Length: 470
Image (cartoon, rainbow, N blue to C red; front, side):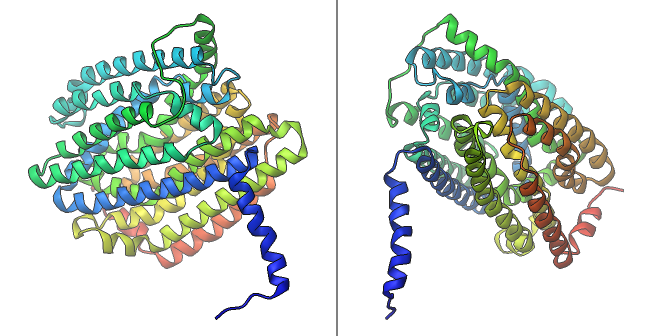
């Protein structure tokens, strides 16, 4: 048996009391701690479910099915982001973020937008099927467009829960709806061996989440409403978010959109598997930024004192540092993981996962500065920054994919983030939140780690170069 000395008890007890205090306390710091913990647990559970579904579905379906679904997802994501007016962010940062009239006006706008996007998805089906030379998109895209209609019906209670950093029930809703959708996907894939299994499962998950957002979260029920003042506030803030979301789509999804034109649909499906495995820390970084850092920056601006800046630095160090370490773990084990988890048809996903894990690290470091600008209500500078990044990244993507195939798509996120960093620092400094010392420390760690990864996985680059059509 292990024994604890009196001295050890005196040391451990305050730590335990402090942790329990954070669980009971309602301060911003305590809510941020609970929010970060719930976000991590919820995201980890979601990724586990996605991995489990991938392992099952890749044994039931063919790589081309995942390539087709990747194109459908890119189109839907593009429509969502090309019409994003920042309702979520507006509610989180607005002083009227819990006013029922304000929320119901936002909900009405959300429904109108969802219906409009569904119609646009149907209209794009024929031209996109011709562009990608994939006739199945003619039937897939109109049905997939129903997802935007369903998502438009989701309750604004989700946004209020994020604003308050009370994320427990929201996390459960996400897991339940995702799990139910996956079960349906696997059943349909087993019965019909068709890409439609993926689409129908995704529709069911979206519908279940929409219903649960209304019945399982506390707060007033939404109803159709319209207030001119609320609309003007949402429009004024969202006019920049609209443009920044277009840029955000190009930053986070253009690789698959461009690859779909230059590589086979099967190769795109393989790339998507490697990207999914490598992007876990990157996607978790986006989740932390939206759910934890944005409310912190909004309620505790760095401009207002050194104490706020210290709190932000500590939060960034813990969150980003942990994600960078996770990224290195995935890059070092990626070759082995893909080999163990997936069949031989997906072997090229091995080097994709190894190198993509490293390339996505620089964006994880700079995500916080986007939350800084939005938390300060400065959607204009946020939009300008994303436009600069998206322009640089698109130019690099088109050039590097033509020259190097999958390898070009892999290296572009990290390289474009480094090229745009001076602009990022400029805008962050204007809001009093630039932290060059912490950024430099992360850059040093990433650089050394990348050298280690390439040393142990030296065959990753030649393997991808060999896949380029001659």
